[in-house]
Length: 336
Image (cartoon, rainbow, N blue to C red; front, top):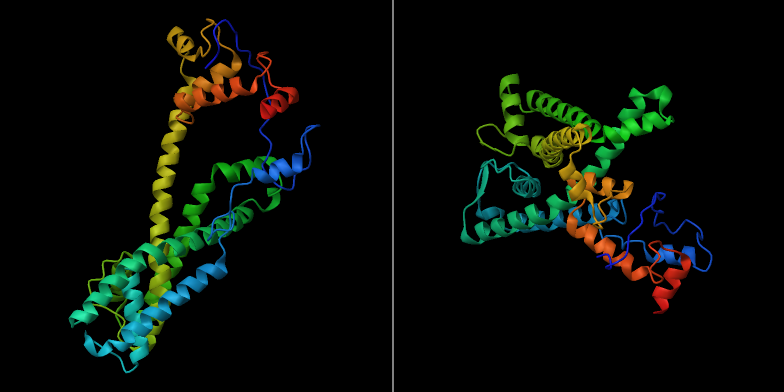
């Protein structure tokens, strides 16, 4: 908090420097590159920064499916329902159906051991594999929405305005991309069920809708060996794309409500009560920085507690009590 008897002075500042190890030294007396490298946040195990490590995602998924398939292969004699001639394929099919929570019911465990195995595998699939798949799929959708944007704005992809439009409509492009992927997945599933499983088009549409929404009624399923091989991959991808579609639809709605709030904050008239609330240092005057902070608080971008912490850090670094920070202040604060 500001010290008594002192007037805090604010002034305009440039955007904060990027914490990238690639940027060079910025201030004399400070080792810019090494200091910047210390500020880089640690990379996640899975994401490796902003991009997922697909080899790790694939390895985890492969290990999960191999373990599940082997386990259910061993207990296949304790499973009841419609089984194909291929025992291993039935095990993989049941593994995927359990992992994605579709649960058709055409294959079910009948013994206590098989039931306990299915329960443990279901929790592991929902808790682990689902999270990893969503990260990988989100990255793929990001790539697709960038491609969609370049297609729409083919002749202006390098313009600054187009780049700003892309950032502003990022969620909308994600929704468009996931909707297109969903349409292709539904069409491919219907085509396969009609041609291979011999279903009527209405029954095929009914089956794919029950599958991608994980309802899994079970009256229409993949029964042939070829159908279950196709289902092992198709069910995994389709249920994930549906989840992403509704996620982006909800995110778009929240984003539009946030924009409406921002428009209201920016256009409403400022009152004397607003000035009183924006006066951080109590000098009965509101600077540009104080006014900007107040508006950010109204938008929910920053809280009063965060502002207080920033001001306390500023007071600690402001060794000479001048109301501004310099390299001398930083050096003195670090040595002190």
